[in-house]
Amino acid sequence: MTVTARAQAPFALRDLLQPVRPTHVVDVGANPIDGDPPYKGMLEAGLCRVTGFEPQPEALAELQRRKGPNETYLPHALGDGDTHTLRVAVASGMTSLFRPDPNRLALFNGFGEWGRVLEEIPVPTRRLDEVEEVGAFDLLKIDIQGAELMVFQGAGQKLAEAVAVHTEVSFVPLYEDQPVFGDVDQELRSRGFIPHTFAATKHWPIAPVVFGGDFRRAQHQLLEADVVYVRDFGHLESMTDEQLKHMSLIAHHVYGSNDLAHRCLAELVQRDVITPDTPNRYLASLN
Image (cartoon, rainbow, N blue to C red; front, side, top):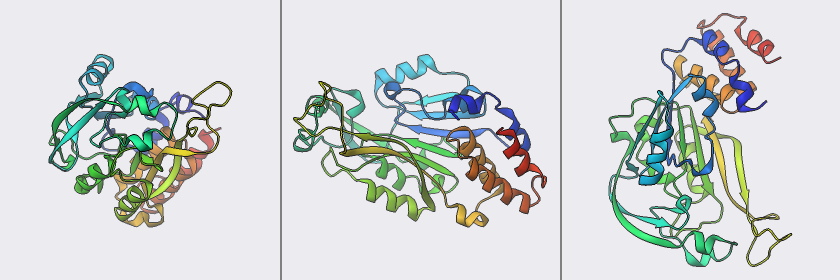
């Protein structure tokens, strides 16, 4: 079941749950270069609102041009609150607060050129906890080329309200001193999240080998991935009714995780928040 298909009948689950507010998504590094975001169907159906952050002027301008009524985009670079250097790379998707490591980049076809730094710009960063424009949110999507851990560490208060984190992780660091998957995993687990699914994985060929004339065609080497973390559903007693509602909506509409959505619904039944037949009605609606 695709995201688009899940959004074609968008209001049934929301009407069953009746959350106090629409689901709030925060998108850090909202650069549209990577295509449609995973929450696109939910946004188009009017089931969520988005607050995005994008410090690159051209990418921000494109987001502003495309945005709908439920989208707000801000120019801030998020981090630890200190001033850092933004390394603007040939490929905008590789622009980072970390310095590209030329030795690592040379290991993979194409990356030596894509990661070449064109400009270095001092940028003040803001801790997410201190951004007044952002209140409680439910899903944090983040892809900022190695600085994800820095943002998590500056968002402890607001992450306590979130129910899901969709983050890029690196298995092979391409930047100097870049945190890798183990660092991010440990941080998010310490904040009550557990891995739920790999939304995407990227394999890449090791230079200089080219398979079938395509320098992007990989065999086995794992480079990076998008991992979805959710609040630990083994301890639903620690979640509020609203958190359960939003985790159910995100699980269903964004990731097609019907079993997780059902688990949240069953807990809400135990709390007498929704009617006892709601979980079965939900499962029946999938057919």
